Amino acid sequence: MMTGKESLLTALGEAFLMEKGTKIFYAEAAEKAVNADARKTFDYLSEWEGQHMDYILALYKGIVEDWGIVTFEEFKNKVETHSTEAGIPLKDLQGKIDSYCFTDEMGALTLAMEIEGKAYNMYRKLSENASDTNAQVVFREMMEQEVKHVNHLKELRVKLADVYK
Image (cartoon, rainbow, N blue to C red; front, side, top):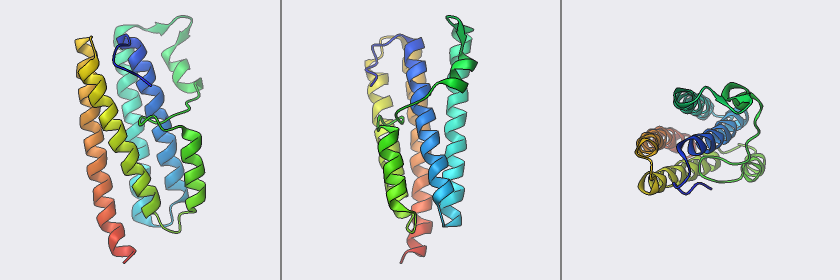
């Protein structure tokens, strides 16, 4: 887990991995969703996490074009991630997704809200602890993105509340 004391490049790499993990979670949630609104929301959030990955990639590339002998593009395509942006191990989430079987998307929604809330808190702490002012700006931007995700999930909760009365 990041502390905020990492170099900007290390922090961007770690943030990229966590965004990728969350993207995978949302893609799997969308695939298993029965409710059309839930499927659409989870698909959208998965794409949004992909945009976060692209944002982080662009920031990284703006600083340095390659990572040793491996380019960031190669890193992006080949690296395996093991956690979400909330620091929750991806294997734990996959088990939870499977156990819900999505007869009720409210379980996935609750888990998604937890992920986004933890991600917001993580980026807040990182922005407060970062010694690099550029890293502080990046982490604040990521906080704002997490707020948007939570708002999107709240909209889904209202839609699902009508379905699961």
